[in-house]
Amino acid sequence: MIVNIGKIFRCFALIGVISALSSCNNDNEDYSQEGKYTKQKNHSLETSQEYEFVNEGSQVKGEFWTNYPRGATRKLGNIYDEVVRIPVKLPIYDISFIVYSQEFAERHGYPNSHVTEMPDNLDMMAFKMKTGQGCIFQFLIDKGQGHFIEDKDSYHAFFKLGNIYDLGSPVLTPDKVDGFVEQKEDYELRVAHRHYRKPEGEIYMTTQTIFLAGQAYTPNKTKRGSRLSVFLEDYHAYVYRDLDYFSVRVGCTELPRKILEEKNAMFWVKKMGAPDFGKGHEVKAEYFIKIPIPDVLKRKAIKYMSTYNNYTLDVRRAWRKIALEQKNIEKK
Image 1 (tube, rainbow, N blue to C red):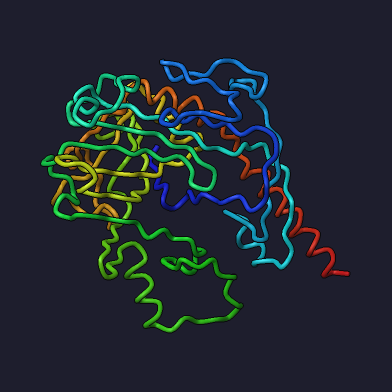
Image 2: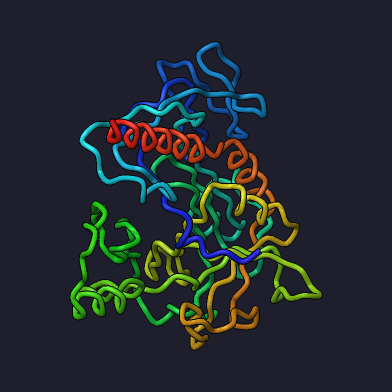
């Protein structure tokens, strides 16, 4: 199971208001709402009539407001003047969990409530799930491991928001008119820079530099395995002394969740000097630094990613219905 999430996953901001449940659980903040919430030493909350805890039976009903088809239905229409309301089963997410080593806690003055056993090369890892941003892992690793961007101070990804015909453009554009032929110079510039940009003061890298994998070896016909190219959003070499910071978007769907359920789920971070896998080179495990995901954080991520209903199916069905109705109107 080898998939490039940079090609299949783009998170959407909700334009409208989703009613009902908001599943929010942030271990880093004090909870207060008119004195109704009480923070305990183990960072759990006392029961109250003012809220409900999220569990396997939790359900939510809301609406997704949008004025353009998404995903595979993008070709069915353009950017419409009217906004449609589509019923979806999706809460407003604002969830954050963090774990770190005992040494990290003592050095930086953090409480022991989030201390857990960590891999030797990992000092901190956090999981975030937020509406409009998706599911993100942040982690701090020891400097000097030889990762691919170790010689840089900072990196920020250029997120491709445009449609498939305008790769590299941050603007969501309408479909091009029938018969349009792009000028050769425009096409070459767009294709050459759609994955790698170097504006003043920023460094933009290709995808397939970090993978979420279920094992430490290269999958083949005899040794099955899984890996998923995740989207590197940020890298900074100066957040903590002697540590490098990474932020990667993995997606909230079933595919990354299934990989996280593997016993040895980990991140692969490309080594300095490794081939550019975006150019067709074979992805081999020896080209990567392995960053195991702590079990306690993995369990939390799986639990809440499991609540992420694939509302995109509802949205696509709605747009197909709209497109069919529009065709019937045009025939009349």
